[in-house]
Each structure stands twice: as C-alpha cells, then as structure tokens.
Length: 238
Ligand code: PXP
Image (cartoon, rainbow, N blue to C red; front, side, top):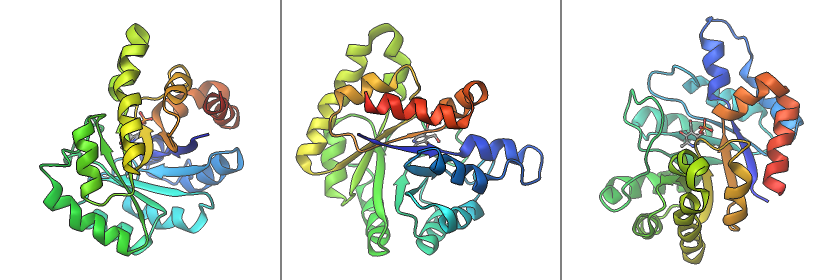
C-alpha cells in the first residue's frame, strides 16, 4: 500500500494569516502521525507565504515517520535541506512566485543543472525525488541524472477524472510501469482527493507514496483531521 504523506502547506497558510503560531504546525504534524499518516511534507516557497524555511528544522525534530521537503532548488532551499537532512527531498520546477506546481521537470534539458544537485543531496544521505509528467523520455532522463525516485504530477489526472478516468490514468499507469522497470521509486501528488485517489492507486501497483495537502485539509473542515486521515488511508488500502 502506498504511504500517505500529509502536505501541511495549507495549515501553515492559516497560521501565517494571523502572524501568531496558531495553528501550531508542529502539533498538527504530530497529530497527523498519531492519526496514521506515514509521512509529513512541506513545500517552502521563496516568499514563504505558507511553509517557511525555519519549519523544516522544527519538523525534523519531531517527525518520526518520514519528512519530505519539496521545492525549487535555490541555494537557500539547498542550504536548508542539506543542513537539516530530511528523509526525502522532492525537487520541483516552480519558478519563484508561482501559485502552485503545475508541471514536471524537463529532465533532458535541465540534466546538467539537476545532476550535481541530486549528487549533493545523495551525498548528504537524503533520498531524492523529482517532479515529472508521465512521459517515458522524462523518466529515462530522471534515471540518467541519478534520482532515487520520481513524483508524478497528477494534476491532469485529477482534472480529467470526472469526464474520462480511464483515459486520464492511462499515461500514468504506463509511465509507472516504465519507471518501475528502470528501477526508479514512484511517488505521486497534486490534486489527489477522496474521489480520485483509490482509482489512481488501483492502476499503479508500483506506487510507493502519495503526498496530499489541499483536499485533505479542506476535508478535515468537514470530517475532522483524524477521520479524514483514516478516510485517505482507507482509499489507499482499497
Ligand atoms: N506535490 C507537489 C510537488 C506539490 O507542489 C504539491 C502542492 O504543494 C503537492 C504534491 C500536493 O498537492 P495538493 O495540495 O493538491 O494535494
């Protein structure tokens, strides 16, 4: 069963909107783990509008499952993760100021830039993952630059789920089989929710981890955090 890593960016956004430490991200992370989450993710962006760079070290102190830090590899970002050494770093091609992640890396064109960064992370004992679209060429490129895992950008799947779920999942299922044959680990995330998650998981038997934030936090408004995490775990099991 793929692991559920809860992305806490939206919790940090609520905290930041009032300037005090409420809700307390550390308490929420601990509670997510207590309720069954198998990982905690944050994605600090350069403007730090939701997760902040100093949240990384604070979470590293308390997370007992797996800490995954996502982000664009600026020198500041690399400095933070190389110092803190989370379990996994997911490199995302977001330019500073971007609203949310909406595409994967071009692992061919940007190979010379990514290869040494992945090398630095691996030398620090950090598992690396890079955000990609479900394109076999990009997976070949991912292997060539030395990453341990890839994370599929699942936005297009989620957006097409209601109208054509078979067509929407097909490129991910075949890309996942290709990635597994290459020996790459496989993660996925973006816009996954209680409706579209189980079907996606059922079609990607090699999937190791999903990271889910926006929908999970919204669902928690209605169902509560503990119930919501159980609902997501249930979707991952089935
Ligand atoms: N993966 C990456 C690389 C992301 O940038 C995000 C959003 O921060 C997610 C996964 C989670 O997406 P969502 O918040 O839509 O669940």
